[in-house]
Image: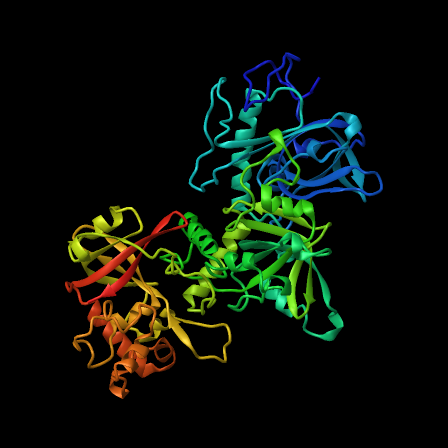
Length: 607
C-alpha cells in the first residue's frame, strides 16, 4: 500500500481514493530530520530549484536533483539568530528511478513536493535525502496555474469536502493511492507560504548572482580562452524562443532562447549563424527584441510591484539581449511542455510551458564564443527552472531597470515599444467616412481593431516629461546602441482626455510630423493623411521634397536635433506647450489595436 494515504476521504483531482489505513501518515518537517543515516521518512516541502532528469550511462537509471525548503528551516535559522539573507536554508533531495515518469515532476519554483519513503543520507558531510526505486518511494507535486498576487491573504479556508480544482491547480503523481483532503489543506497552506517566501526574501546568494552585463567581460584578455563556465545564478526573462528545424544537423542545439534582465548596454546580441536565415527566427523577433511579450511581462511586474520607483510602466526596455543555446532534450522539454520530463504522459503532463514572457533561472551554464557570436549554453549539468514573476530577484531586476528609466538611459533600439506596428490593415470606422465625432468612452468600448475621430485635450506626456524643463524631453528620443551614431527616433505618447474618459494615446514615429508640421506649412492645403502623393509610411521630409517645398524654413522636427541641440529642444518644448494648453481641444483620428490581449490606442492622424 502507499504510505501517503491519511484516511479514506474524498478523491482529489482524479486520483482515486482507496481505503488503506485509518491512521494519519506522519510527516517530518525539514528542520526536525535527525542525522541518522538510512532513516526512512516522509516530508512535505517547497521546491526552489532542480536539475532536469538525466539518464545515468553507468546504470541506465534516471536521476533528478531537487532543492527543497520549508517554514521550519527558515524559522529555525531566525530563532538561532543565524538568519543570513545571503545563505538561504535548503536541503537537497536526489531521486533515482527506472523510468523518467516515476520521478517527481516540477514545473516552477514554489511547487509543493510530497515525498514518501525517502532516505536520510550524507555526502561530503552534508545531509541530503535520497529516493530509491527499491524503497518504493512515491511523489506528488502540486502548483497553482494562476500567478500569486502579493496582495493575497493566507489562502482559502476549505472544508472537509473541498478539492483542488483542476482548472486552477496542477498535480503530478507517482503514488498509486489516494491524495486526501488533508493533503489538500497542507498543500494550499504550504504553496501560499512558498510564494511569500520566494517574494519576500532572497532565494539565492546575491554573491552568486550573474547579471547579463557581466558577460561582456568574459572575453577581455586572451588568457580567458574561448569557453567560460558561468559559476552562479542567472535570472532572466525569456524574450523569444527559437527552435531549430530538423535540417539543423547533428551537434546542434535543440533551440535557442533570447533572454533579457535589464542590465548591460542597450543592444541585442547578434543571432547565432544557424539562425540568421531562419524564418522561425524572423517570426520570433518580428515583435521586437526584447519582444512585446517581454515588455508586457515587465509592465505586469510594474502593476504588481509594491515598491516600484516609476509612476508609470516603461514604454520600452533598456538593456542587453543574449542568446541561450539549449543542448539537452530534458531542458528543451521544459520549454515545450512545462515539465521536466519531455516524455511525460497522463497525470504527469504539467501546466503551461516556459513561454515567451516567462522568468527563468539558469545555473552551471557556460559562456562561449563561436564564429564571433557570444552565447550562453545550457548543458547536461545545468540547472534550469521557471520562476514566479513575484520572485525576490525578479523584483530586484525590475527595480534596477526602473532606475535606468528614471536616469533617462537610452532604450534598446530594437525593443518592442507599445506603439509596435500591428499587422492589422483595416479598421472599423465610426460614422460615415469616419468623420462622425465620437468620445473616448466609445473608443474604449468598441472592440479592437477600430478607429474613430475625437475631440480631445492633451493633458501630459508619457513617459512623464515636463516641457518647462526641456532637458527632460530627451527621454522621448530613443537612440541606438552604437554610441557613435547620433541618430534618434521619437517614442512617446500622451495622456488624452475628453468629457467621457481618459487614456494613453501612443504617437507612432511616422505621425509625429503631423503634430509638429514644418514651419510655414501648416495651412498649405495638403491633407497629410489623404494626400495621394504621400504614402502613409513616407517621412515628412520626403513628402516635402516631392512637393518642392523643402527648405531651411520648412525643416521637420527631428528627434536627433531634439536630443543633441539645446535650441531645437527649446523649440520642441514650446511646440509641446502649445499642444497642451489647458482647455484646448484637438481633432484626432485614434485607432485601437488588440496586442497580446491588451488594448492599445494610437494616433492615426491629427488635424
